[in-house]
Length: 330
Image 1 (cartoon, rainbow, N blue to C red):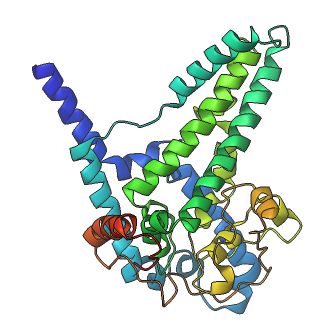
Image 2: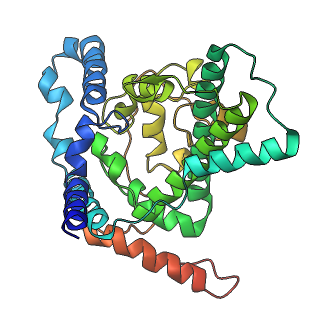
């Protein structure tokens, strides 16, 4: 019993400290080398486009008070701490496990089709296949889940929490309702489980993913290439040609724009091809656009406190679910 109590106490403390521990976890977007790489890219933007105008110093460009100390950013920090505290108290189990999905799929394929035909292939083939499939299917799953958040009125009530941010910082990533986070984790688990199960069957268990710093290498590299600038004031465009393949930080900033022309555009995370095929792609311009972030004036926000971000979406989603058929209002 004392041992179990100590384990629970340690788990509680770990959950409370999760925002700080993310700085040391390569699987998290806020891992300090990822933040450093984003700062270096932002420094390049300042050097090439801002420095010569003499409008601001490098430090002022990277950390403008109007962004980092904006009321919306301060709400991001409070909401992050509230989510960490609730996770520590509730400790909800994962609804879907990628490992269980992978094992079930591999066994089902083996029973149906027999052993996979790739056992004799060089091990490198298995590494390449699983690495590529994990990245592509995971990205597709997140695109489809994100598309559903925008198209479903019920799910949109939860996604409003993220889109209500009036300024963007890397911490805006965590301005996400816990139920939306569970939705996205479930979609990712399905994709990763399907990738692993398919490759485990085809290569008869010999497939492993290429890793850097103990995490999926392609995701790690993509994060190093400026993912944290997606939620920032730094305008980094890849140009129209490349932005039909990869989504730039500037394109995600367009996604957060309150301008109706930008609504429901650039829904992907890394690959732009899903938006291209779905007709939701919007390339950015090389020059920074003047954008206002947040919800449209006619779209009622979830409130201006950490607790309202948590509770208001649940209330509004419940009203939508319980509304009589044909009624579309909130």
